[in-house]
Length: 234
Image 1 (cartoon, helix red, strand yellow):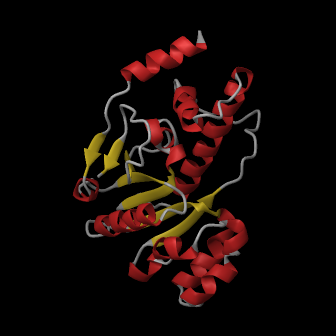
Image 2 (cartoon, one colour; image 1 turned 90 degrees about the vertical axis):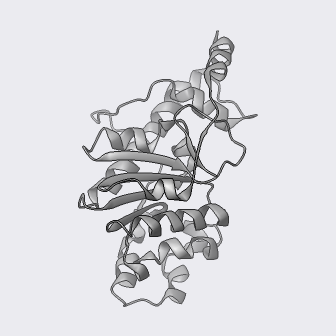
């Protein structure tokens, strides 16, 4: 039965809607813009920076980075205040251990305070959902997750737990990003595309926490499965 459900879902998948950088920049403020990247991949991170800068022409930008643990915020604030030099950031952020990807790829995003963005670290761990916490679960989320796992499928018995774990992390990232935004201009959330594909990740959760418009984009095609709600910058 599960195989038939996956096959049925695959049959209704549509070609991605392709957009340009100008399409992303034309989102009217105030809005939440969620950008899905391949972590540590320079073309994706460069495009995310470019999108944020284009949006800044229409309004202030709060840039929420899911790859940076929330404990990094004090260092980002010191940099924005001019108390930390750009060259000191990798060491102060414990970059090699806490992030692990090439600093050069992330530098334009992390140092975006230099052109006026408010940069916030919203990365969270994989802690389980507290029993009392309310968590909206997106329908058919496992179909999207199953495709992302590819040749390493999740056992059927683990699927409910996997969906809850992913949705809880999406929820916490979205909540953390909205908490640091004043509702003016743009909240630009940059996260692993794993949490953006199919419209069931961070954008799904954010849309249930704010009355502002929530738009999601993948910044590159990357040869991944195209889901009906995906918009891809090409």
